[in-house]
Image 1 (cartoon, rainbow, N blue to C red):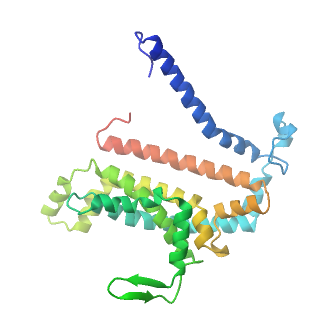
Image 2: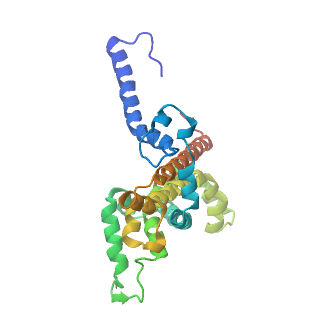
Image 3: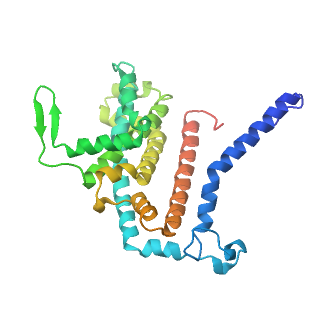
Length: 297
């Protein structure tokens, strides 16, 4: 927004200082990405810019690290696991998170604020604490049951694909709850009452009336849950095994055990994927505002 002609000197100084500070913060956040992307095309196995790259010599640039990523069995196994775990975890997160958000949006639900705080706690609690708790919970074959004692399970979820999926789903549910709850703020509940008066059952009302209107929020939550699962590494290290090695886990191993510039190529691919998903989120946000009769600004 431009300054008005009658702005005082102090207002002008604050206006331009504020913009300068915001620009510096933006540069501080984006600078590492701006360094990683060109380094991923380095023709040498270095993590620094070579003289050929600084001279913009075509001989200093290569796709060898991308070729290594797509032809290396370890990287492809990690990519395959990530592409298998993240969508299923996202589906579980969306299913449970959407139902929870709809239920907690009802004003007659007792203690809904406390329940909401508990449901979104995985976003607040440090990830290492959540991972430790999941590990001990998955490793214990005894589950306490009220008025019964302990129920013995003949299996544990530690080191299984199902355990990793459930853990990632638990991390993604808060994002779904928040986005869907925000969409339900402008939802006209008289539409569901009208549907019930016309003889539709609750399931039909949900899929025919409610879901089309809250769909932007559901998709936004799903994208956040997918990104959370696809980029997560701490929980996988605790509850997963070598068979469930995901892409972030392989990157962590590459940094700890064998320094490979292929990590830069993978990081660039993840950055591009994140930009695409965030662009989709912004388009969905604008569509949701248009449906609710709000201006994008």
